[in-house]
Image (tube, rainbow, N blue to C red; front, side):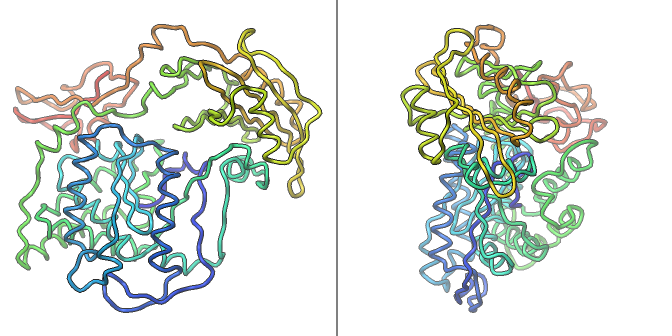
Length: 496
């Protein structure tokens, strides 16, 4: 459960692994073994990367959801090996951090040292607190078993660090990284470890154990993995993050109830479901991408909250994240990155600071305007990196009391070809005035209680908002389209 979906991969960094190892005890077994780094180092890694995760993906801004998630996570933590009577103080006194990320991706992951995350996309796909408890326990299990440190010890490469812009070159363009990768400014994200099958199975086992000891009906965790399997089977859908880390979901669907039964036989009553309470917490939760944070339509990118728009070339891929918008050419050989520059007071300063920070000289720079009235400044230059030369356009503009900066680049031999594409986008950045788009609202989860026995497909509105597929709605409710739904059933229906 620790690799982000592939569409995030261009913007991530790889965890740093120590070249030397340390010998310390395991919180699980109490016995000593070799790890890539000490527990203090794990805490430090988690703390540093946590700030990057929060900056890149953003926290879900709902105090009640966050307080509830933190509370139940700590309850499960208290029944984990991290709080065992015989565990070393270094583990027992470690402060865990539990966060809900504002992302539609179905994802849960943990960082070394006690940082655990789930996304609102994951919460939407669960039907009760017991299912969530197993996932929380699973992630605590990764931390307690020190899987990141174990995996780090197995790496053949001592350490790999890749910064934002450069990873775009390597992953999307096949271009070299190097100094050009500082072009995207502060972007630096984590690429999570792909744990082995045994690590995932151990965390599954621990997740069930911790949930069961907290009193949750741990067998419910199987239903969530059924949903993940159904998502992976949908035509044209990317494999969900939680399925991409090895164990077959069918195996997990079978093993989770069996492991839960074993704990029940040992006297641990598992009676907590909290279905209605859980569903009520989802009422009004944003579902899918939030258009208020930017969306693209008919060749234009719109940001309703910041009230700007700009066109992008036909066939280019748009990757929108809280900290940046990335545009990638259809051939994968050119990139445009738009970021807010919070360090500069005007467009000229933004470009000059960028050049100075990266020790770049440019004889081709000038003042200009975007859409005829927005002050702007740009510079063009080339940079040698390895065996290739990159052509780069840096374009900053002043709008709405803020400074925005584009970093546009490709290989030098293609720069003249793409320069027109870069200019067509940057020079047409403008104020958003379309009231339809300015008033766009996100899709949210609306709870509906059925009044009569009906087929699930007959209970869905037509058309669905934002082109949401009916099968997708069936999956988040953990039913099938042809299932008969009994009166009094609470359903999650995306509404706009």
